[in-house]
Image 1 (cartoon, rainbow, N blue to C red):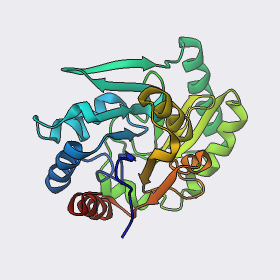
Image 2 (image 1 turned 180 degrees about the vertical axis):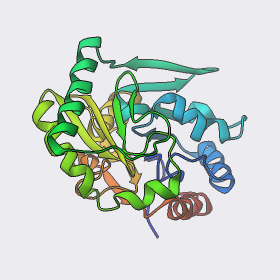
Image 3 (image 1 turned 45 degrees about the horizontal axis):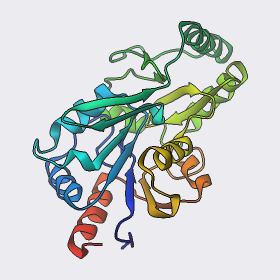
Length: 253
């Protein structure tokens, strides 16, 4: 299927790659991932915050997993967590109160300019403050997966919102993410930035990394990784990702 050279750091996206969107990791994936951590160093980069990482991913892994081989870069690497008897935050590039206000105001201006109407029924926060990232989700953070997956598979609806936001938020980074979301981070922070942070934090060269994600396409939030020049392996979904991990384990590559 794919060749991943022995010793390479494997970097995964989370939503749609290791798990179904905003859903707990499945048992089979959890078992495969636990085995992978026995053999390889692994990083996970996502727009999700650390709280969501735990809810969706970490808390569903075997408690005896080799977490010393796992490195977490939530909110598009504006945070970094590593394990040392417990999960510890190494850094966080948090917004100031003034920056947060500018971002919220920009969303309101954008909605007004587009005459955008929020869905009649939403689930949880529509605009969530993740401290180092502000995330807009069309149906809210806790919307059912089936509803979200049908909404904007081509990303065109959210690209129209992003284009207006870009006009108001020139000093920030605006990225279409997940199935119904738009993330705002500090300027220059995206998944390409994550690769450079991983290179520095883990002392691994780009030649010794491989990235696996379900949105390595123009407009996808994994796509910025390509400009770093590291090897990228696209997967259709978490099931295809399981096949890839299984092959790595079976061939011990």
